[in-house]
Length: 386
Image 1 (cartoon, rainbow, N blue to C red):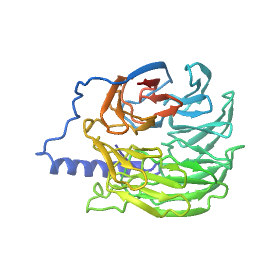
Image 2 (cartoon, helix red, strand yellow):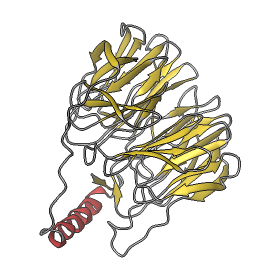
Image 3 (tube, rainbow, N blue to C red):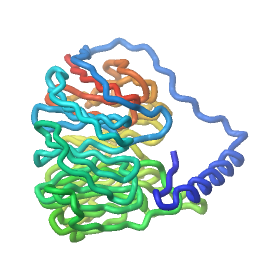
Image 4 (spheres, rainbow, N blue to C red):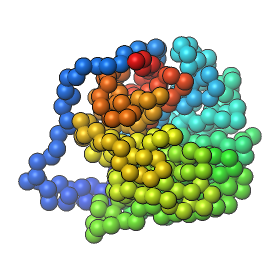
């Protein structure tokens, strides 16, 4: 889905409609690829449903940035209807529930004793992680479609308007802001900021990734990952709409109609890159980088070199979530609410689990549990067993 900023969304949506109409008209004689049909196979692992619950409000049309996050032995989730909930990760027991009274669109993020969510109207709200008591709220001037990140110095928030802001942990006042110019036409979605040490990393709709110092917002580096190509605005979309990943001294990033790349965390230097398009994102462990491609292929690359390890094409056009790695299993969800379990070494199908409806956003791994939230607000914890 295409989007513009909050300040001039209507002109941008009008432009998007015109471009999409032209795109369809040019391709009206071409057959549209249907989602891959799910084929039967002999399951070789057992996946147990450990617990499930729900948060108020979902949206079957608009994409939001609501997905569970974990802190210690608790999981936090938020619903579009304005509810935020803390759960015990082991059994799903509710620790606290809080109501914001606004339409939530991004989060939650957790850290530093806070749980933080963002709204469609540009409000950021922080709760005490232990009790659910509302600590503060702040306006950030644009819809928040990704989970805020919490560092030792600030709450880091990305808005659809291209702003990256640092807010005070104590009262939400603005400490600093950075801005990236965004194209006139973009996908609906934003890359979530990620904190590692004293730096925050975030991708933008112009194909760039920046690293900023969390206390003062000083830019440490700014790297172009995917330069736009083509003549039309649709062809030139290069959004980085998923969170970057940091492992050790390396940063990993995936962009739409662009590249998957590994960068040096301290300088932003690109060590390797591959021409793979993704708007959902990737997962990383010591051996591999696993990417959910824009057309539904799942690709595993060797972490140090970017060389192909395997490709799984059996999920094409099924609008996948970002993948996660749990042990030697890869889990990825699709638009019908199925979770597909793949072998980490070969990409072969191991099991399939139905959890609910369309699942767009990344799950979270807590120990040997994988916790998903579908777009209607159902939260489900699964445990794979050999």
